[in-house]
Length: 339
Image (cartoon, rainbow, N blue to C red; front, side):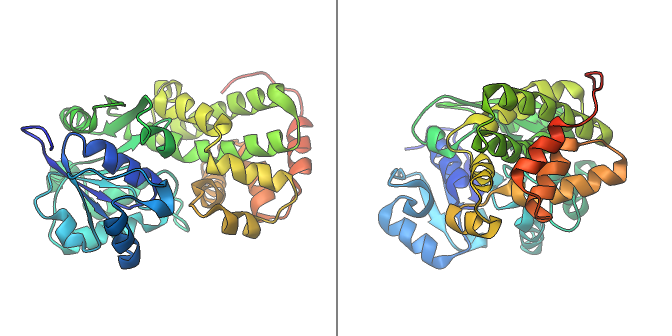
């Protein structure tokens, strides 16, 4: 049973990460886990698990599964959106159409296809400023693999919201069990870190797949952090955010961890597989694939130098061989190390 004083959280999106968060939070609160696909929901109800994305880890009695959005939102105190970034705007529009003004935290990472907008910019457009609308929103990000969270292994993330009181309140609500939640007001920095680290993970996977070793991977991560920080600061982020969980922490994990889908994309590209075949075989969303083109397009508009991102985009979108992409990075002119 949920503890006295518990709330109800509506978790929208029943992929691996959404399900892991729902299962963790259900140890302390009532949770409604929503998925669009009725067949998927039916399967989860029967199994009391999510075998499609998260194996046979069993749901407790505080977690209910819904395919009706209104039913998922009824009686909720907070919405946690874990749908893919490409579907975030439509999800916000659907929530608005239901007349729902609950506070919303999103836990997906990337840039919106075509518009190259980060989730906080989508939220700003669709929900407006919380000072005007009264509807609070923010981002949850950090070094976090669903497969480890659901096993009860220690996990720490950052929750960002422009209003400091709400960021603290929402962090306290989600924090608990093996999930530690820090809070900040730097929504821009947390959003950028979550998006750009996926691009760098593809680069690290290419480097590892080419057999370039630990030295090269460390250099890729370090210079990737520089690119991430440079991009974020151009948008107004605080530089110190990139030294924290949502920046360096998430970057290191995604570039080195065995569960990283984006690193796996890089590894398989280096082995000679086509991108189409790689994505078909993954079975999960690798946000970095769509994010890379949007990041470099926006970086070019802002005149932000992002050489690693550029080469990853060349390999993903323009048919450049992974080896040539890495060798061109190594062949750049000598320069001072700085942001």
